[in-house]
Image 1 (cartoon, rainbow, N blue to C red):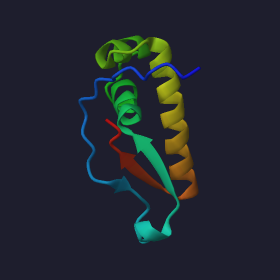
Image 2 (image 1 turned 90 degrees about the vertical axis):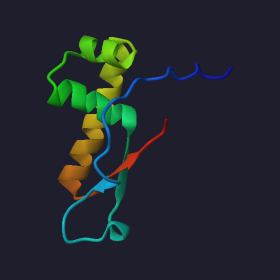
Image 3 (image 1 turned 60 degrees about the horizontal axis):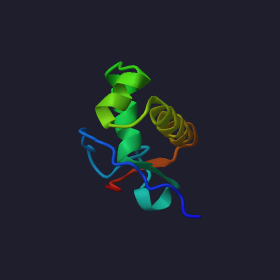
Image 4 (image 1 turned 180 degrees about the horizontal axis):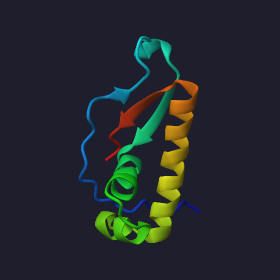
Length: 94
């Protein structure tokens, strides 16, 4: 049995570069954490724009539960990169 197909997510925000990394260390020498466009969009909508998960879900065309899962993963990745000195590498998977 194959998994359910991934629903298309509407993402309006743009990446501001290829990666966000600690200064002074080349990207090639850092451990990398990949963050996907939908994860960045969920962070932007909920944490920067102050939307509720319900509002963000409507904006992105997915359920509130999906936003909750996406934002939990995105926050964990971001916290890992920031606390461990890793690079956040932006991946455009769409």
